[in-house]
Length: 117
Image 1 (cartoon, one colour):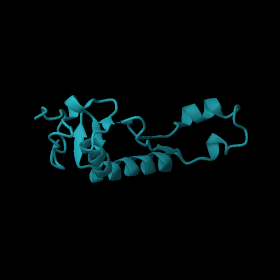
Image 2 (cartoon, helix red, strand yellow):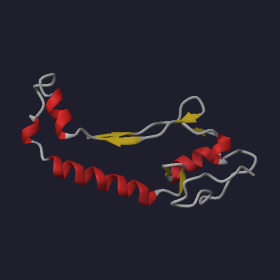
Image 3 (cartoon, one colour):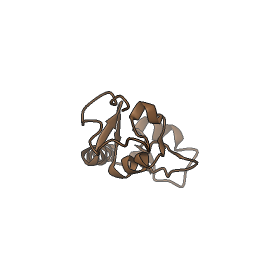
């Protein structure tokens, strides 16, 4: 299982994400990485459950949502300072140095970002 955490670079913060292999994919890659535990020895039901729990915890802590992506407090703070949230631009999300939005600029569960002010 992987947790990819991005950092702001060149005025932009790309999306972080989680990922894990399915049993079928692990079987396919097993011959290439023989030093790893064999797929049959892994508990994929438990891996899936943990991955789901991790993603629920991340969504719970979000203070905003842009399209299908949640925005944690730190990312929103960077956006208010002018850092662009990838793959969205400042106009899409509504963050700008001139008129920063409040912490709940995008409501939880909303599928669209608010219009810029």
